[in-house]
Image (tube, rainbow, N blue to C red):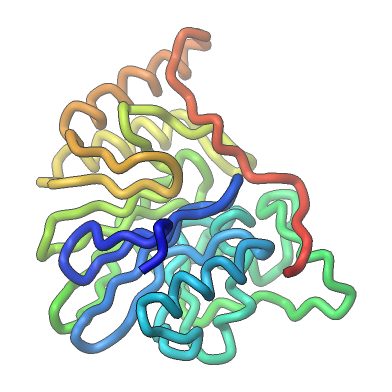
Length: 243
């Protein structure tokens, strides 16, 4: 198993992203193999190698769930969309399918680019019964309007995308985002029993209760325009190149 692939819970794997690419998470459940975020287009070969190290090929992924519509999370979707279902929140789906590059920042650099498709337009509280695991979609707008977190009932783990990071660090407010929505989203997450937070970038949060509380403090400072807040250095690049 490669150094950038780690089993972080039973049957749940962290596939670390390179550069500004997001992490990808693999859930090997009884009924389906689910990939949470596909990462940067230019990191696809690395992702493919990580899957192969786990004995999986691209066609073995049944479902790809994107936590939001930015290119560092959706860029490799096009390598999966012929054999896997692609699922995103409906607010993100409109931007992806209508090629709203201003919001997604996604351009593959391929003159024969295949348009990205979305097969499943998700709503808040959508559920995926995977047999050994159940995933719940929690709509958490703030970073973007289509941001979601994914809650796994068995382990009580939260895949947070760019909604919140370890230490209560916030992502920046992107196009279509809102500080007010951000605060409301994090407050709703506080009501959940969460064992760990698996973010789209950086380290795993081992103390979700403290980190969510700190995130609310940071978000309120952001709303007041204060500069002394903890914000993430992870921002999607403006363009990518194909592998």
